[in-house]
Amino acid sequence: MKVAVVGGGVVGLSVAWAAAEAGHQVVLIDAAPGSGASWVAGGMLAPVTEAWPGEEHVLALGSASLDRWPDFAARLEKKGGLREEGTLAVAVDAADREELDGVADYLARLGREVRRLTAREVRRLEPTLGMSVRSGLSVPGDLAVDNRVLLASLRKAATDAGAQPIAVAARSVSAGEVLLVNGSTVACDAVVLAAGARSGGLYEGLAKVVRPVKGEILRLKARPGALDPPTRTVRALVEGRHVYLVPREGRGLVLGATQYETGFDTDVTVAGVRDLLRDAERVLPGIGEYAVVECAAGLRPGSPDNLPLLGWLEPGVLAATGHHRNGILLAPITAEAVVDLLAGREPPEPARAADPARLLDVTNGGG
Ligand code: GLY
Figure (cartoon, rainbow, N blue to C red):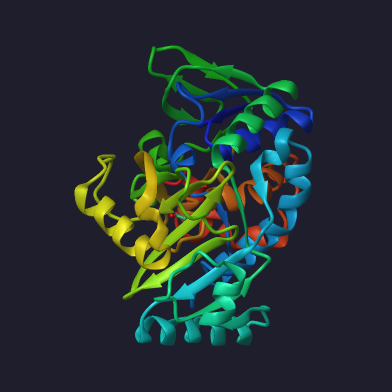
């Protein structure tokens, strides 16, 4: 089949790579591949530490994709930037500790293996964390990836597999056709809509389903003499707010992430930067000596139930969007599901809950 993948973020690139490897003739349509939410991401592969009561389908899908990550990474240059040091969740004040205990109880009820840690045990694992950390959970199975290494590796893999880039933005998609902003069209047998937060603007049926959820991150670097960043990803609760610290090669650290519903706004705000730095410094006092390398904002593609939309919208138009906070985590299972759907097969079991039919009438083109 001729397959047009619209969107060159982590999802679109993974789909283009897998579809080309499966023997399809693939074009990848994006004016600036890898420059959207995937570029700004923290890169956590953390279905367990990001689990939320009531979102068991999200946890099941995320866990199934995490299981696929080591093989997915092994086939990429530089292992796609995968880091396997694991994750710690930590709490700062008494209420945070209570909330973290609640999370541990919830995960234990689901049969997930998490180990509760005292403050002293946390600091034994990560000696540069501050005295304000009161307790923790060890989740060694939750991993992380350097999103920018991943994007470069995926672009190479997709191109090597035969996917052809078209560096023009799409204006709209329909069965058998992608209309580009330059007025030309790309004819195909199937369109895979993987345009993240922009998906709703390209396909009318998704306009009220996929929405932008802004997130800001800070990229820092430990200067000579500054204390080391943690070796594991640290997800912290600080007076009820969430902040995460994701280490990068070369003493780098990504802090994230704020969450706002402000439409297509990618300004980095003073309040966002202040909150991230204030909360992260409670957890890692040494960051006062770090260099600020970059502040950036991206737009997560939110969906009403935080599950992606993964399935046919109408014959010839497949959705692979709405991944919200989990695009990088869900890339391997999304790519596998798309290849299955293109071949007329059922996708892997945990991906079936993500069928767009749960949210919209797919029989009339999602309208
Ligand atoms: N998964 C992290 C975030 O969306 O901020």
